[in-house]
Amino acid sequence: MTFKKFYALILAIVMVLIPMSYCGISVYASQTDSETTLEEELETTVDEQLADLDLSQLNEFFQNFCDDQLGIFGGTSIIEKLQQIINGDFGDDSASFISAIGNLIFEEVISFLPLISSIIAIAILSSLLMDLKGNSKSIGDIIHFVCYGVIIIIIISCAVKMISLASLVLNMITGQMEIVFPILLTLLTAIGGTVSVAVYQPAVVLLTSVVAKIFTNILMPIFIFTLVFSIISNLSNTIKLDKISGFLSTVFKWIIGIVFTIFMGFLAVKGITAGSIDTVSFKTARYSLSTYIPIVGGYLSEGLNVILASCLLIKNAIGTCGILILFASIIVPLLEIILFMLVLKFTGAILQPLSDSRISNFISSISKAFIMPIVMIIAVSFMYVIFVGLIMCTSISL
Amino acid sequence: MSAVSAWVLSIVGIIVLSIVVDLILPKSSTADFIKNIFAYVIIIVIISPIFNFLSNKNFDISDFFESNEIVLQEDFLSSVNKQMLNSLEEKIENDTKNNGLLGVEVGLTADIFESKLTITKVSVDLTDLVIQENFEHINIKTSIKQSVLKFVSIGEEYIIFYE
Image (cartoon, rainbow over all chains, first blue to last red; front, side):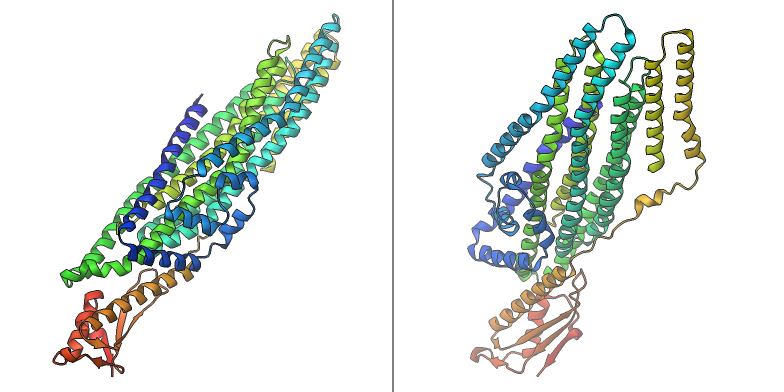
């Protein structure tokens, strides 16, 4: 299935991208180690600039985190975390991160146990009643109808929770983008990336409004309709409508693929060109300054460099922080939805030996439909991560 | 959006209705006939809104492009520009001090609210000027001009002295 390939590709790229962002920062940090006075100056400038920057909205996001998310994020306040990132102290985060995720998975699986057991019990009951019904066909149909109805009610009550969770997560990611990108672009302007900012500004608007609207107004309804059609197509043996849900899921795949390709192409081409233009213009500006009196040229840039370097450090730290916040905030709902999908698939697999395959088909088609919100959340957060990564990479070489 | 959900709801309704009819009717040739009729009705229900969608010219794609502007933090930009100006002024003053001229105050004029910093005027205050002993023979203004031009690429006519 193409969903799976897509999903694997995204995961692979994210895994490559995250360590990359960390490397960039530690390199900058270790370069300054050689000169302690410069480092001190840099530290004071960083502190001053952090005080100047308006981080209140980001902090608000952070304050709303629950304990699980704090464990994943691994910090106490946003400024502290930023300073940690700037200094390159990441060391002991991974242990708390893994244990937090492990606990989460365990808790979620246990919370889904009543769901599985009640579905299995009802399905077995329905099959027992079918055996007892004798020869009458319509009584068998009515028994199936009733049991099926009960299973629908049980699953839908959970599914509605998951759907609202998914749309909440999508809105939250958009909200985070609206908070993080202005800060990042401000810092990019401060270090002289005016051309890049001119390119990224419409791209951010494209991402936060157009792409987000496509996701919430087109793809989310398609997912819900797929769910509805997979429910009614298994209601009876005579009327089948599973082709329509197949059609809808194909439409979903095409829309998400097109949005993804257009957005990535737009960003990659324009962002990279603009970044190089900025680098060139910055370098020529510096040369015109330094060649004025050749000997002091290097000396001149030092004073400015501390200010620019601290802007750059803060920019990358905020980028990393944004990615960490994103991870901390999507990992809980994402795991919940993935586990829900897996649990349903497992239930469908268990129920297959029963004589009537409709219930098992229904449950596995629901679980198949639940790949959609997972893909949506991962796609949006992937675009976000790529974008932040691009902005972090657009650093004018000092 | 409401039209689409109405469409889906009508499909669901007609299917549930046909299933209920299927359950109730006893097995006979009329039942098969009625089932077939329901199949036609379902197809009509599925198809009918598609013509409406196609003939409806009101669909406005620009709804998706209404955007909220990204606002940069001007305060931060201006404060970074101010920091840059201050550090430049400090550098120039240090340089003049090295040339034996104490108490020179340099002021750089630039629009700090613009994202790209361009220095428009350099004003040099010489009221508190003290010349160190070894450097008495030098031309004060040329020396200061040189120091300024090391750090700022600006025409000499924009360097203004106050005495």
